Image (cartoon, rainbow, N blue to C red; front, side, top):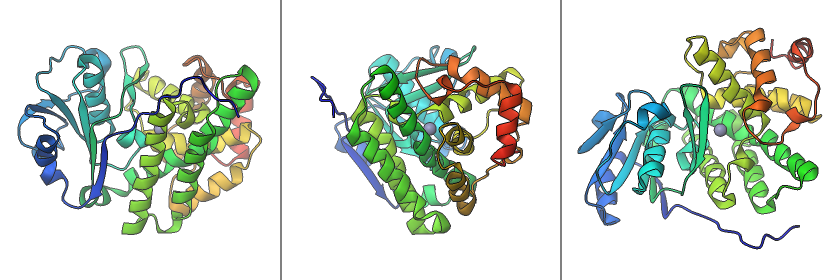
Length: 334
Ligand SMILES: [Zn+2]
């Protein structure tokens, strides 16, 4: 094990998981000494909070760069788009932030990583963790099932992302953190054990705990590296291509979940297990179920390694369109 000369772990000050928390946001804001909160909301979450609000029309970086923010705390309320927008506005202005997620759809609910669409593609930033996170169980558990499945897919994706990280360590000598890799593995096992009961209150509770661990692991590691490997690169490439085609991007967690079947095949690992645990939770396993055709997916796979300077299994395999299609057949994704 390698010891770094400096290891700075960053944690949120408080993560609260409970009932009726959305109605208590203002109490938490003032308990932490803030007086002028600005709520970053979408059209679905605007009515949940009272006070100064920024309504996010699109989570694109260029749009967010035009917004001026006045206040002493930015509070993101909603799904991934609102949370990423709030994080980015905080990153840009230096105003601290808090998160009130309303969908259990990705580990972004507890992570300091920011992923934004831009006019030309996608931009990633690493910010500090929020002051507090309020996870209102009533709101999160009553969201449509596809969001919990997406959250599940984002945790299952750690099977592939941690391996890619280890591979990067072996091949390029980049730092590999054992503590964070164990946290990710635990988050994975924790929710996978509940896969057949994911939609019970206990199952949703476990899912939220796993998402907190995974998102928090990014703050502990100081990088999204542990949580985002080849399966995330393919999903980011898919988003870019779908936007270019004038389509709406799909749910992040579902795309990375399904792509984990593909990347674990490339990694020479147990892709059948991945497919089975997705299926047993009710998570999609085919391209058709996520509304993507074979050619578009092949384009995304071929584009993915160029998106980010991050070593993954995609740097080690020779792929062309024909080969990608053969693999998709073999792993049952088409
Ligand atoms: Zn993710």
